[in-house]
Structures are given as C-alpha cells and as structure tokens.
Length: 212
Image (cartoon, rainbow, N blue to C red; front, side):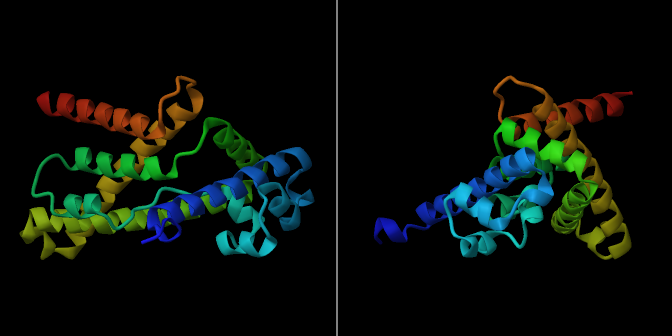
C-alpha cells in the first residue's frame, strides 16, 4: 500500500481540513459577525474550495456549532459492551475520555465557539440537539453492556432502558463538568485527562456515599 493510500494518513488529512474550516469560520464570524460571513470567505481562509466546504459541513452554522463527542465502532467500544462486570461509571469514563481525545480542540478555538454560542442562541440549540443524539447513542450502548452483565435485566426492556438512561445522564453531567473545568483552566491539561479526572471524582463520591 502506498503512503497516499494509507487510511491513517487520509484520516489525519480529513481531520486537519475539518479543523481548518472550523477555525476559519469561528475567526471570521468573530471578526465580522455571523451574518457577514460567506462560505466563499471561509473557504479562502481555510485554503479550500467551496465545494470542499460542503463536503464537510452543510452550512456555516454547522461549522460553528462544531463536532460533539462521538462513539466510534472500535475495539474499546466492543470491550466496553463485553465488559463482564466492574464499575460501570469507570468504564463509561474510559469511553468518554476516548471520545474527548478524538474531538479535542485547542482552548482558543473553544473560547471563540463558546462566545458565538452565547451571542446566537440558535447555534447553542443546534449544539444541544447534537448532544441529545449522542445521549441516545450512549444510552443504547450502555443498555447493551447492562444486558450483557445481567441477562435477566434484558427481559425487562423498560427497566433496562430506564437504568441505561440514568447512567447516561450522570455520565453526561460528568462530561459537562470536565468540559467546563477544562475551558476555564489554563494548565495545559488535555480534555481527555480532564474527563478522566472528573469521572475519578464521581467514583470517589459514589464510594463515599456507599460507605455511609
């Protein structure tokens, strides 16, 4: 296989282009205002064609909203589903840290995005819609893990879904805690590490509560 055909190289180039587009639109929208920015300007700033822009995003608003966390079919995801017991939140924390590592962006970009979301509530609403989709995906994955750990639970679909949803909402709250801390702190720590730290704090809280 030639270097040009290397899937790893293609994926890195794809991610680099995606990040260049998002950086361009965030900076232009900050400089000129959202309404004053065109796809042509964004494309010039990112050094791509408008056609390439639309290969990545359906609109400038979608590029500003950015990429939320995502669960990718992987050995780690399959290992989580087949976990066979153990602390569920610790395992979910590993999944969230992996997702954060893939979606991680520099702090300056994050602050620009946060400011634009505050200025334009419809952008924040789009971001939340993406998070709800991620919550649904995570709930489904957690339900598969719970059913694997306790086959009897799989026979009560309502109970299984309810428990998976509860775990998901706790995990999303912990993820938001990590994201908020990472955005507000300037210590060079990666988002993935901050996610892991937040889930460690959750674990300590649960252990302390169980000991009472």
